[in-house]
Image (cartoon, rainbow, N blue to C red):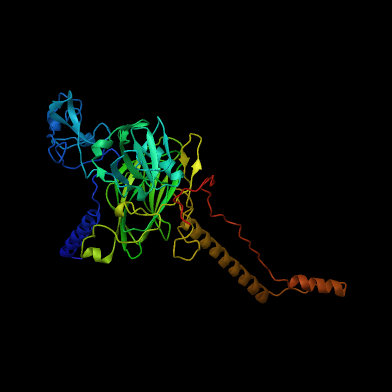
Length: 476
């Protein structure tokens, strides 16, 4: 390939990649916008106060002198950031209001997929009229888990301690409001927004699910229990299968894994071979492009050192993507439990099971996948055999060993037969006819080698405690 062809190929690949992920409108994939790296430099787009430059706020706790290496997104600019993990991005302002030298930024584009927005709740009737509970340890995920267990599709938090459940139809007559109204901290986690007084922030219950099946051309997958820290002993599988695509791009917009034992893997959906593995020491450093239309995402956590996990964007590439940009939106019909209010970013059916743990959280165990959809059900080289290994190489070496042993057996039998033909056996006189018969039988007895290969177990038991109630998102 000449230099012009190589340059053209690189340009085309970059064009496809940028067009693919332009499909996503959100600039934030965390609940509190801690990952915001946009360019809004005033507290509101309409009539907001201008932000001070972070390299000129030395009288305040957060500045570039104290954080010179870009920690928290700080730098020689005045863009809104969230360096301290508050409920949403903010910035310092020159005009003090209510004896405050900082103010939250109202950023419409900073809303994680799965967060349906902030809504007014008059209580007559409630915005989400399903079951509810109150807790002084409320977090976004504890409310989501509660509503998911009650077979609702939406979970709403209000005033920092109240959790309400409902369905998509309940939001049809309500208009989304500014996120500034829903920035009360959760009582269980002061870095998360849990609505406001008379304002409810609504999430889809598929956020933070342990496993699922995704078929839309684009989507966002969160680690289990997100935005809370993932629980101990998590084993989760997600399948991403988009018929007609020739490759699937993956982009980790957020990655927080605590140690080297916890890991995230991307596997070829048909061969079960690990294509990419990420952990604490080897985090993702760019886009991952996997050829084909079927990929399996695998997550494992041990019993210690939990962290916040990951947010993963995926985009399937089809042949026309090389000529045209990805359309904004998806017309693909999802499973019947997919939410029409989510758009393409989270519009995939999710399947999971749950297993209760001692601390009251749910530990979801699911998906020992033995064959790919649409393929004959048989074991293949490279099939998943446990965390960090496959059975492909061991199976092939076993076959090679058996073949070699069979060849040696055949060679030995042929050599024995040739020995009987070429070597003359002396006749030994016998006393009786019966002895002669016996001697003749012994001398002409062929040499038979019997080989019984030992049973080889290629199955490594990985998951335990497969009991527990099915979640409302389990497909039938």
